[in-house]
Image 1 (cartoon, rainbow, N blue to C red):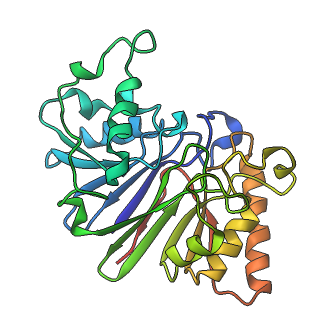
Image 2 (image 1 turned 90 degrees about the vertical axis):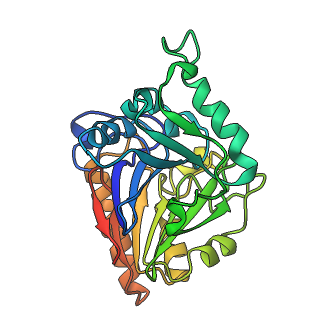
Length: 281
């Protein structure tokens, strides 16, 4: 399994000098199984660059698109996803049964007038919204599992397993506040148990939480605690706040590395950055 990060910023795209290291594009992940089949997670602004990359590949004509939820920063790149405009591509929009209607509606609404000049029904790609979820038969060459996120309006986290290795993705998940349909921290600990790699929402500091409690995101300290309790091997801090500078993220990582060592944990802690590639073999 190979994971490529095309966007890891939260809330809105944030270009500028202060985000050069970790990137300013919003959530989009590319996951390739051992056979090379493509699964995309979320359609934030980073999907534009993924689409340009796909257009350079001769052997890719089918893919799966999985959505964690329908907040704008996780969908805003879809109208600029070039493969959606070409008939050679089949796009399986995959997810749990209860999410199928909202996924089709959420994608279509990104292209409604007066917000965008092209309607969804003008896209030439073959969209399949009837996948058995989570994941269609092809992307389920990996084992794909889901869990409800604790986030306003709901959402889903995912676990991808292949060849005895496992990647867990829990973005937009507030561990310190239980939203409707959200679960307890202990449930997320069990979902991530013994994962080789965890990307978890780490948008806020404790100081931020004075005003952002219930907004749907965790502190970086909460993400660390979950990873240690779950015996995760590697923790990637994800969904960086748009105002968080590269230097501030570096400081967060250093602080968490020291805290992990103080707890005698072998956990590897890093901040996810745009362009990062990780292979789990």
